Structure formats: structure tokens, C-alpha cells
Amino acid sequence: MQDEESLVRRAQQRDHEALTQLYEANFDKIYRYVAVKIGDRVEAEDITQQVFLNAIESISRFKWRGTSFSAWLYRIAHNQIVDYLRRKSKRPMVPLEKAVTRSSADPTEVAELNVDIAQLAEATKKLTKAQREVISLRFASGLSIAEVAEIMGKSQGAIKALQHSAIVSLRKILAVE
Amino acid sequence: MVKYRKEFTNILDECLERILVKGESVEQCLQSYPAFANELKPLLKTALITKKATAVAPRSEFRERARFQFRAALQEMEAKKERRGVIFGWQPRLATVVISVVIALVLASSGTIAAASNSMPDSPLYPVKLATETVQLKLATSPLSKAELYAKLSDKRVAELVRMAEKGKARHVEKVASRLNNHLSAMAMAAKANGELAMMMAGEEMPMMEAAPAMPAPQMTAEPAPATEPAPQPEPAPTKPRPVPTPKPVPAPPKIAPAPSARAPQGIAPATPQPTDPSQLAKMQQRAKLKEIMMQKAAANPQAIREALKRAPEAVKPALHQALAVADSGYEQALKALDKE
Image (cartoon, rainbow over all chains, first blue to last red; front, side, top):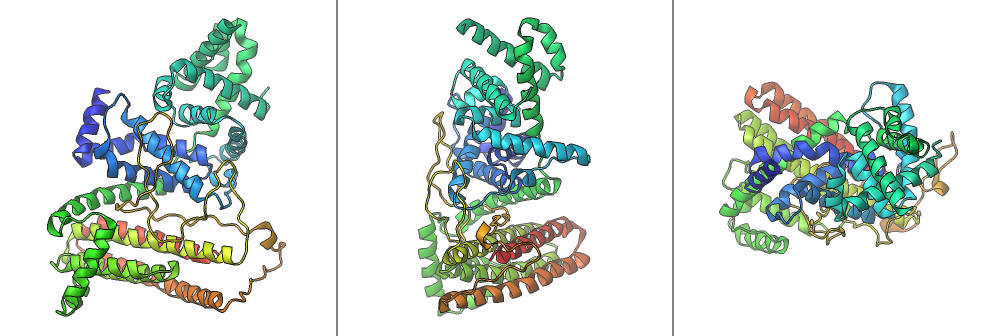
């Protein structure tokens, strides 16, 4: 944490190296978080870029008030997604199976993965907002229970319970035996 | 029962950590908790499916583009700081317009604007040129006229790129490439906005996205996407959009699929909707003309950069390569946006 804190402090002084380190450390996680939440790879790219452009624009206003830098970054991403959904509310979506593919040379793997993503995208629509958030943060971004708890402002116990209920619901929706 | 649920929730989380993070197998975990195996197994399988489905990675070309634009934004930030010291320290958008108009009016009679219009980024008059362009953009009212203007400004940026490359001024090449990226991004957005306007005027219905709140129609402007202010509250809420002055990525045009009723069966050419309103017809003609111009520019401007690359000193070549990528991608996106009828 101390490392991140000193890195962020340097970044707030417009230290390019520190800003770049924070960017590289968080880029993939934020991209996956956005991609899973909106289900469109191209739009996820634009939103991810925007998240980091907004972050460097407003990093000087970031304050350590018991929340980590990543929690702040996810909040920007969340707000960006909300804005995106608002702006695009009258536009059609590209089907997820066409939009999101994994960087893989194995076509069999890609085909199999596409099906899973399509099912997952449909399935998560039936979850509660909080359950969806836990799935995005825990599985897409690979964050720990403690990190998810911090970002969502809930206790770790509450996050574990949400994770449990989300997986139970997903199992029913996806009909996993 | 409550105690059992809590215990099970903790066991599930422990197994998830072991499987997803430490790479253990489902069977290993089930062996640790045989009493819960029947309940655990399908949930762990579901978790694995979910994890696999969410393992999407950014495309390498996007990663490169994003990295370049991030660096360009950092440089723009530095440049902005420098400009603040040089030109009045203006910041609010309205002040920018007002001051720019005043400058334009005052300087018009002296011929400074005329002189500045041909200035290069290493010239003291260059900020005047940029201010004049800002005024021109503010005066362009329709998305299409904004797109046309951005196309013209992009030509200017390419000419500047070539000149700065000849002079071996890598930093200026990078800055101009960043501005070119902004112009092309805004041009694509303006073309896109015009396309949506045309769709709505033609009465095509755009399906609502599920779970999205009912909102007014998207903004029909060429302005960059609004930024969102991170708020400290635990439950995030969308904040009021505000413009971001940093370089924006060249956005992909929205995927506007024709409404089912507008789709023609396979093998039959879709009927082109014929506007009855003369003003709409004029807009369609203007759009077609813009597309034609854009196609020429999409060929000519990247070619000019390629030519410059051949002659450029080694030091400016990386920046020129990036500029070329920006130009190729930007014109492609703008043309795609114009293709959406």
C-alpha cells in the first residue's frame, strides 16, 4: 500500500513515470471490468481509454481518505460505464458473442469461449446490481474479497455472501450440473 | 442454519481462492470438504466457467494505440501547463471563446491572423492560429459543418507534421500528432452524430438497451465525450458530465444496425430511403460530398506522412510512425461513421 501511495503521490506531481506505472498496472483489469459489464469489446476499449484519460486529468484531486487508488479508478470506470449506458440508451448493442473474443491463437478455444461469454452476459443481466458488480470485480478484474469490499463499501462478509448468491444464481441460469 | 450458510460461504470463498488464484483443481478442494462436496461442486464449476468467460484480453493493436494516446495526453498536459503561462492562463470554455473572439477581432485588422494562419508549431504566432481555429469551431453549428471543419484542420495538422518532420523537431511532431488525433476523433463523432440525426429524422426506431435508464437522445455535437468525476461515496453515481481537454481516443463509430423493418432480405438490395424534405435532401448531398472529400483525404494525408517518413531524420521517425497510425485509424473511423446512413 505504501508503494502505491508513494507512486500516486508522485503521479499527482505529474511524474510521467509514476503515471505510466499506474496505467500499466491497472489497464488490463479495468478493460476486463468494463468489457464484462458492457459486453462490447470495441466500446470497452474506448471506455477504458477514457477512464485513464480522466484519471490523469483529475488525479491531483484524489485524496487518501481510507480508499485505495484502484478503488478510485474503478469508480471512474463505473461512472464512465453509467455515462456510456445513458448516452447509448437508444442505440442497439452488438451481440456479445460477436464483440468479445479472447486473444488466442486456438480457434476452438475462441469458439468455446464465445459461447461462454454470451451465456454469461445474458445470465448476469438477471443478477442484482450488487451481484453483477461482485462478479465483474472478483472474476473479471481478479480482485480479492478485501479489495472488492473496499470498492463497494461493504464488509468482506457481505461480499462473500454476494459472491455466493451470485454464483448460485448463475448456476441456475446457466444450468450447470 | 444461518451458521451453516456462513460456514459454507467461507468454504466456497476459500475454494475459489485455491482454484482461481493458486491453480488447484476442483477435486482437490472437494477432498478437503467432503461433507460439502455435493453442494460445492456445481458452484465451483460455475465459478470456473465464469472466470474463463471473463478472461478477455485487450487486442494488441488497441493496447498500442491506447498507450500512445495516454503518452500523448501526458504531453498535452505538459504543453497545457506551458500554454497557461504564455496565454492568459485561460481555462473555462466560455472564457476561451470570448477571449478568442476578442483576439480575433482585435488582430484581424492588423493582418496578424493572416500571418498566423500559415504559422507552424515552432512559431510564436502558432497559439493565435489555434485560437482562431477554436473560434471557427465554436461558430460551426451543425455536426456536418463541424466534421467538414475538422477535416480541414486535419489537413493543416498533416502539413505541420510534414514541416516539423523536415526540421527534425520530434517534440512538435508528437504534439501535432496528438492534435491530429483529437481532430480525427471529433470528426468521426460529428459524422456519427449527423448519421444518428438522419436516422431519427427518417423515423427509424433504435432499440433501447436493457437496464439503461430512459434518457434524452444522445448529444448531437462533435464535442469530446464527457468526463466523469470520481466521487468519494461508496455507492457510485453518475456525475455531471464535463468536457475533458486532454486528447481523446479516436472512437469507433457506434454500431448502428438498421432496425429490423429496414433490413432487406438476403440477396435483395436494401431500398435507400428517399427524403421528402428538401433540407434533408440537401444534408444528404452535403454528407455524400463530405464522404467523397474524406475518401480523398484518407488516401492523401497518410500518404503525405509516409513520404515525410522517407525523408525524415531518424529522431522523428517514431513520432511520425505514431502519427501515421493515428491518421490511418482516424480516417477509417470517420469514413465508417459516414457510412452509417
